[in-house]
Amino acid sequence: MIKKNLIIIFFAFFITAAYSASTSSGSGEAEGNDGPPPAKNYTLGYKELKRAEKLDKKGKIEKAKLKYKKALKFLLEANAENPGNPDTLYYLGFTSAKLEKYDNAEIYYLLALEMEPNHIDVYKYLVQLYLATDRKAKAIEKLKIFKSCNCEEYDELKELIEKKG
Image (tube, rainbow, N blue to C red; front, side, top):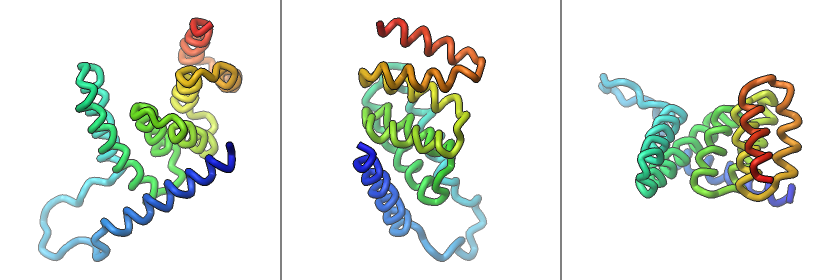
């Protein structure tokens, strides 16, 4: 399982690095361009993610999926530009989970926790991912680590696990 995850991470990094290299202009800002600099990929990915969530809440699932895919593209590019950023990894995990790419989501969440072990949102969504994929034991294991935060998310997740029976 670990070997499989490492291979997936390697290929994800390789593909994003290759894609970023092929899409960058390479020469910096063009002369005479008085407009604002282009938005960073992280910001673009975050904005697409928020748009997708709004569509999801309205029940426009297909449109939301398109936005999630677009967000994933930008976030992968952002990760290639700045590898190991826990927030980028968190959003990659969240977006992957929304696109039902649970293996990738788990990898991104675990990488985010390696970078920032106290990232509450990562724990929250990782526990939810484990419950969604019928891995209650792993959810409980992560919840135990999360217990020390003394936050309302812990109580919500504990209740969610108890409901899963």
